[in-house]
Every structure is written in C-alpha cells, then in structure tokens.
Amino acid sequence: MKKNIAIIMGGYSSEYKISLTSGNVVFECLDSTKYNPYRIHIFKDKWVYVDVNDTEFPIDKNDFSVTVNGVKTTFDCVFNAIHGSPGEDGFMQGYFDLLNIPHTSCGMYQAGITFNKRDCLSVLKPYGIKTAESYFVNKGDVINEDDIIAKVGLPCFVKANKAGSSFGVSKAHTKADLQPAIDAAFKEDDEIIIESFLDGTEVSVGVIIYKGETKVLPITEIVSENDFFDYEAKYLGKSQEITPARLTKEQENKVNTVAKKVYEVLKMTGFSRSEYIFKDGEPHLLEMNTIPGLTRESILPQQAAAAGISLSDLFDSAIEEALK
View (tube, rainbow, N blue to C red):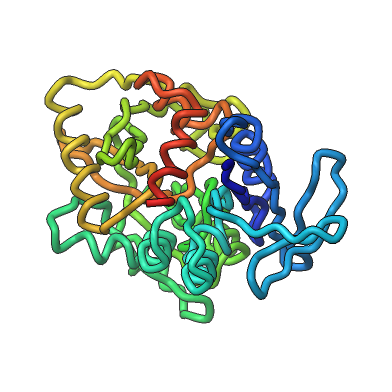
C-alpha cells in the first residue's frame, strides 16, 4: 500500500517563497508508485492542504490530519521542506515527535542548536572545529564599535543569529558600516553574531544519511560575483557554484573529515549542508543548514547529481530513513 506523505512548506520567515519552491520540487519528484504526496502549506495564519487545483483544506492540528469530502487522511511520514522557522528551528520536529509521526528532518534538539549560529559554534568548539572570531550582540545592548573591531577586525560580517538564505547579513568594511549592518540584522532577529572576515576559498558540503550510511556528497565551491555569498548570489545567478570544487586532494580530505565529524558530533539525521572557508589551509565552519534548498538549482541537489543520485532517489532515501 502506498504511503501518505505530507510535504510541509512555507513557514514564518523571509525564506517562505524559497521553501514553497523546494516543497513543490519534492512533490513533483516523489515516486508515485510508492507515495501519495500532499502539499501542506504552513503559515502563521493557516495550515492547509493544497490540492492539484490549488483548493485549500484546513489541517486539524490536533492530529495533523486533513478531511476532504468527508474522508479523513492521516500521514505516514512528513517531508520537511520548511527553511527557517518553524521547520528548521525545532518547533515542527517537537510537534511531530509528540504526535509520533516520522519526519525527514533532524531531531528537535539538533534543529534548535544548528538554527542558532552562536549556540552551534559554541557546542562544536570543544571538538576542535575551527571557526571565525565572533562577537555577540543582543537587541538593546549598548553597541561599542571599538570593542567589536578590536575583537573581529575589519572587514567583518554582521549576521542575524537565527535566519537563513543570507537574510540580515551584511559585510562591514569600515567602522561607519557597522551600525547600518547591525540595524539590518536586527530586522530579522533580536540576536546577532559579528564574525571576522576569512579570506579564502569558500565551499559548501552536503552530508546526508543515504541508504543507511552517512555520506559526504561532492563538494561545491562558491565563487560570488558580489562581495559575498548573499541572497542575489544564492538565488539570482550572481555566483558560480562549481561541483566538484577545485580543491587539492589534501583540502578535500580535510573538509570531508571535518564535515562528517560535525554531522556525527551533533548526532544529526536527514539532510545537512555546511559552509566552510579555508584559512591557512584549514577549513573553518561558518554554519550548518538542516533544511537546505531543494530546488533543482540548489546546491544539495547539484551535489547529489554529481554523486549519481537522482532527486527521486534522494527524497526516497530520506523518507525510508525516517520510516525506520
């Protein structure tokens, strides 16, 4: 009997449009001989099942079911395609865990830790994972620009602590750039992280569970036409994404080892994509995404293709792993 799969997409953050695209790709690629896919839009004002005619039916949050023409449908598994809150920060994971519904993403704790850039880096540092120098600011704190520069130097990156797709990220070249960058970050989050600039090759590394094994996918090198890998570079064609990356064998081995270690230290499951910059020959972790983009142009699907894994197989493996 075919399994009913709820593909959740949308979300509460600035990333909702990207999530809708990711979710629709999953919907189109799932093996129709094995699964009945359902598109579920999750927004602050509504949770709805959207059928092929774009008719909406409300989700019963008590048991995450939907009733259409008097027939109630429950789900065997949830495919999580929500970038940002509430799909990537642990809230949906906790909800589905309480309902005992399998889902394709990592656990609630792992989602909460990795979504919080400051917490994630703090957890990993004792394991020898190299990172940029960082300075933390919360909304309402007195901003001491001289202290910031003394800690991280210039140029530096100012980032919203809990946001993705480079929303709320700016590169500050001068002291005068800092306050506008901080203001922009606070529009996305009430916590920010300011990091030193690492001048080196930037790479993105996908690590997944595929057919029961932890697998590091072929590495992607990021070459941005803009000042850094911002929203335009990620989604509007302002970058080169070169897979496999132009690394030496030594660099490749180092970043593969670190990426797998990070995945295992955090006790991850599901998909992940982490960003690293090589400084003095060593990969430095920037952040980890646990619900990476799944559009046909996104990095993780590119890496899967380079590894000979189709989108249908990639998504099927995630569901099979969740159903275990």
